Image 1 (cartoon, helix red, strand yellow):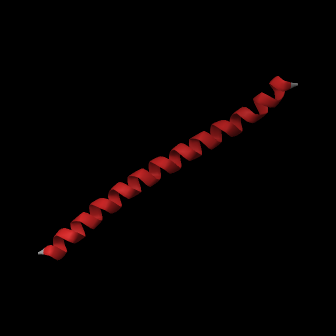
Image 2 (cartoon, rainbow, N blue to C red):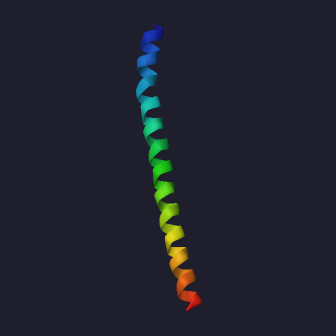
Image 3 (spheres, rainbow, N blue to C red):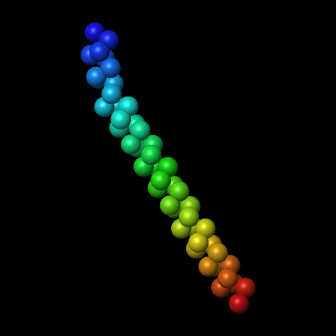
Length: 47
């Protein structure tokens, strides 16, 4: 009975982990791109 429950939960845990990892990586790359754009805007405004 316990093994059956574990098998039922495993795919959900896997999906949650993939989703969280995907969200973290997406936010990380978005933040990097936004910081680069802000730096470029600052350089242009200084000229």
